[in-house]
Amino acid sequence: MKISVLGTGIVGHTIGSKLIELGHQVCMGSRTANHEKAVTFVKKNGSLASQGTFADSAAFGEVIFNCTKGEFAIAALQMAGAINLRGKTVIDISNPLDFSKGMPPSLFVCNTDSLGEQIQRAFPDAHVVKTLNIVNCEVMVHAGKSGGDPTMFVSGNNADAKKQAVTFLNAFGWNDIIDLGDISTARGTEQMLPVWVRTYLATGNGYFAFKIVR
Image 1 (cartoon, rainbow, N blue to C red):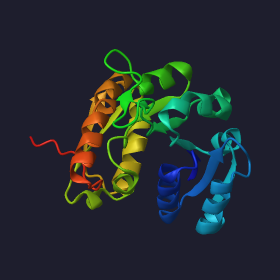
Image 2: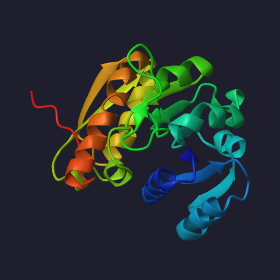
Image 3: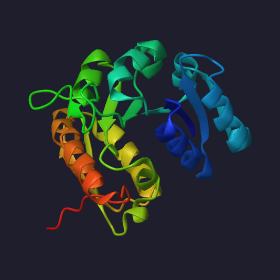
Image 4: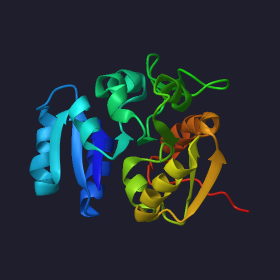
């Protein structure tokens, strides 16, 4: 499958590299066609990897992974172009983290709205699925690195898009998946980030995840 990965940070590199390992073609998108980090990604991952602008990447991908920082997510997707998102599953990993007052971060949107919802409203013809945002990037693509069989959540308005997202989660080793409902339920998973951050600060260990015992 042709997949767009938007964002050249560690999350984008980790997600993109795992997708290539699974046999997918990945185009990494950034603000510029030849972003240094995207070029490095391509050199590392070979013939299945390519790079371009956000628009180039989104046009290429049958599925889009939004791996940008939350504060820049909507702007990046605007540069990707609504026409290139139309009808596609957009797997949104971003979080509304606000570091303006240092650590630990707060959330710049919460309670009555979420970043996932803001993205869906901004791009009504895309099928936004919020998932994977509650763990670090290595655990995202190797669930077992958490030390157990953790739980992952999906939120989104389109049932087929959520099913498509789940196929990727399964390939990443996630076996316990809970569909929370429509995109408004992303409010809950985004608000798990303060718990994640404080757990990391208390333990110094980022290799953990959440488990719903029932």
